[in-house]
Length: 419
Image 1: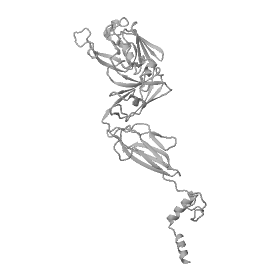
Image 2: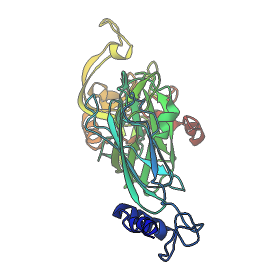
Image 3: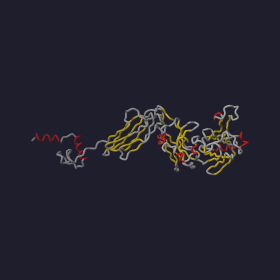
């Protein structure tokens, strides 16, 4: 009999680890602690048993330790045997060229089993992906993975207008001017967002200035801005390939406000300029516009900037280079308010004082008496409108300054890369 009992005493002396494992398996099966090993009473061999759930398995793409990836590569996190609770993709320090890199955003699918990024990454940057997941039993796990983006061999620069916290006139569009032409306009436009308070409808359009050759994308509201409107530009541009591997490196976030509705109406037949503010006429001036040989542009133009003194020469606008020419000029002009990139200004023109309000005698600019020009200069703000009529010249080009207000709404919307 002792030969039979001895093994049973050995079975009661199982190591504690094995006993614990047996308990867990019984508990997961939902049993009440019955023992035995014949498959009928809750033992591991019984039909009512259940194995412990497998741990959640997380896969991160791009994989850690691989070659540097394109900044446009999507980041993708998937899980099997569980769900994703949180995913972050954060840069590790500055980019290789010193630019502050962006954090990568994304979204989970409905089943919380896949997370996919929704934007590009900064070139030449190390990124760390941190994942929190849960298995089927709710047990959490954490995964960390690091990869790098390739540095940009070529870059593209962008200049926004207006700058942050500016107060501008009702005609100024939101504008992004690029150092080099953009081939993939749709990719850039998809990364741009305008938000306003109150809500304003508008659209993006692509333009190339005929004077400078600079390409830009502008957001023009359907109608002039309302005074007091707050406008915010969010441009998630870092890591976008503008064409041929030429990357944008920085995001842009700017907020500005619309100020006084100042619109000036130049009548080149009557030789007057009527200045209105918020719909009310505040001053009317005698002016002298472009002479018949050099008429002033017709149409709606927007104040670009202003300078107290500007050197203006006939050679700079391809009129006359020789001092012997009757059309030669080289003047330091006071109180100059610029309204086109091609060189149209509203400015003081004391040399034409005798013809103010009588005839057009300039080389294309709108001239005024010194005191009148100073009054206008002091009040003029970037984004104010100057609307000219009565000239024999064509309407100003849509990209010569901010001439896009001369297009119908349908014509403007057609200039979007996403139209």
